[in-house]
Length: 306
Image (cartoon, rainbow, N blue to C red; front, side, top):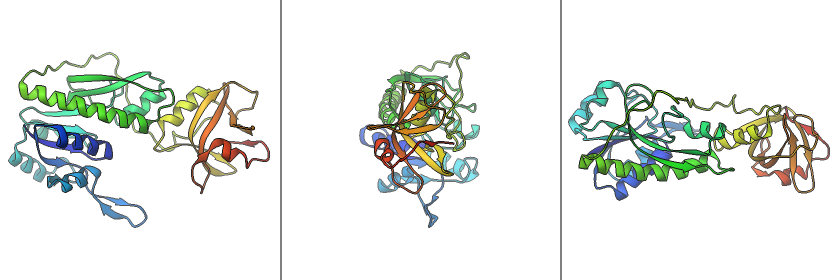
């Protein structure tokens, strides 16, 4: 089949790489978000998907809006059989959804209908889900609501961050996408409507929501730290400056008041609303990340996070 791949970030580029390496189908173009400014220089750089496509001599479509009439005209000229999507970052209008013979199929990193939205892995970790997975489904106008073509389960580790889970889920998702495309080409795929019950939403995490509330239970804070790593990173304040917590784990209560920090011989703990939280990796303001125990050696007295 002739494919137009839609995606933008590195996780999408990694899936595109799997398609280019293992698929019997031809990727004739990619659809991605426009070049974005990088760093202090604000120099415009292509998305990871665009960079990979350029390296392979594949046409890159990067309109400001997916409703751009020039995009619709070009896709009609290309006449793709199917359009796989991984984290494109924009809504595909109905007129474009109707162009490919086999539609648009989206790789989503949850077991739908649980965690529809932009941050499914983060919300699965926040909620303490033990099992998540990958769903390949037909794209429709409603958010992540299309019929399911294939799924695969994935068990989250107790200390697994969003970054680590996404890396594993991307590999799994690429495999499921390849098998789904093969089934579509063979005419053996079956679409199953999503159930109306069990829908949960997974909006993008914000920096404000990543601030730690030390009155929450230690286990909940541990999940917040994991879910926000690598972005936007869980944080708190110490002496009026932002202080990031990169890794932590719940521990038994030692009687510390909420937010109070104590450095012990081999660890640093913080009092929470229910038990203590051991700081495994932290990043004080203006410094590089360091093990919590190493940072704690510089503490001369009890501190308090705000």
